[in-house]
Length: 334
Ligand code: SAM
Ligand code: SF4
Image (tube, rainbow, N blue to C red; front, side, top):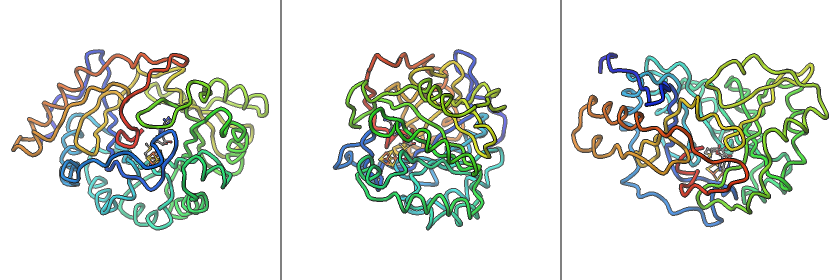
């Protein structure tokens, strides 16, 4: 397809540059905020897009101006064939930034192959450094595997390594300083994320919630923080800081207390081939009729453009007014 299609711009003049592809709804953990103990009902196998269909979507998206692609899930590394898929994505000219979000449990096995396939960097989700607590939050005793996975990512040369910590009051908020200390002598970027009420995740009401501002207040009380130059990027969802003398960085991501909708440049594809222009809006456009019904790339591009045109201005959720999103995070990919 020629690179002539108009770039993706919504009705509010937001230019869409960032595509998140969720390749599976399956996962080997059962994080409480994401799913119930038994997991969520699996999508039907035949509804899940094949890799070649996802690659076609990515190629068309690049002609429309997408420059950053993130692979997520469920746990993306439980889907067979992910490494060659990443390899094919890495070959698409126009993708400047290719990244993966993972729970880290399988990185020891896959990090070298991912790097060789062309993956640049990983975000690893880790909410606690304590083994019992990890087993409680994720319902699996996998902390040693994740720590080893982080080491494997480092050894493989995936950089930077970002650690995503969902902060929950009374569950892991006493570890904020421990996580921040990790950045003193290691070029890690540790980002504290606000808990969101999603799908079938366990949610004990707003009592679990702890805002990004409160994280910053606690960090400021113990360390001297400097704002990072990266904060100048207006489309960035996080605010980054450096502890005095630290090699790495800390950050906060505040989807609820201080949302970044005005600058949102994201688009999501779910494993079953639905385009979603806002994490919290239930409105989706199914790409399968075009993908599987003989539609051309231009037809596909037209669906992308139509869908983006109607991207909601904002999600209207604020900290303290808890409206749950019906969709499961394991399908949307975060
Ligand atoms: N399984 C991979 C992982 O955990 O990194 C990728 C998918 S997971 C759905 C993506 C991100 O969403 C993770 O960082 C996870 O912590 C976050 N997440 C899931 N449910 C959440 C919730 N209710 N509130 C905030 N973050 C959530
Ligand atoms: Fe799996 Fe990620 Fe959901 Fe945890 S947050 S259950 S690792 S998909």
